[in-house]
Amino acid sequence: SLAGEYSGWAGVECIYEISGDADLVAIVHVDDTISLRNLLDRMWLAAPGEITSTQTELVLEQY
Image (cartoon, rainbow, N blue to C red; front, side, top):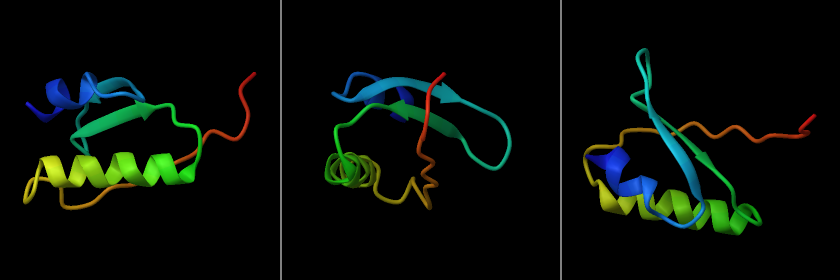
C-alpha cells in the first residue's frame, strides 16, 4: 500500500488512513519548503495515477 511505502521514508513521521474526502494524512518533518516540495514530488512519482491531489497545511506554532 502507499501508506506502508511512505511510512519508511525519511521525513515521514506517520501516515494515517482516514475516511472522508482524503484517503491518507501524512505527518512529515522537513527542514524547509524545498525539502517539502521534494518529498511531495517523490510521493507523486511513486504513485502515478493514484494521487489526484494534495493539500498541505503547515504548523505555525507548537505549544
